[in-house]
Image 1 (tube, rainbow, N blue to C red):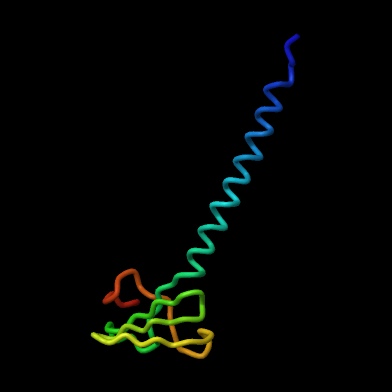
Image 2 (tube, rainbow, N blue to C red):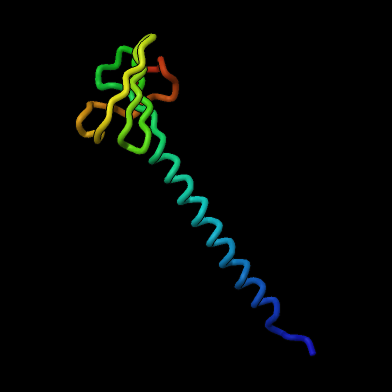
Length: 90
């Protein structure tokens, strides 16, 4: 005998799989953008950029020097970085 609602069971299962896949991809995207960030120092002379790792370790690249700073980003004056290192926000 043919189950009339077999298509419904398959569609229901696929919808839950797609929801789970979407949730996992969104969480992965949010984690990557929280864990690894590019920032600029508040004084934007176009020569310094900061790579922030897990919101605690900051690698400040200034010309040919690299400084490592530790701590919460509220202790430092960092801004969201422009798309390119030498690009300036208007």
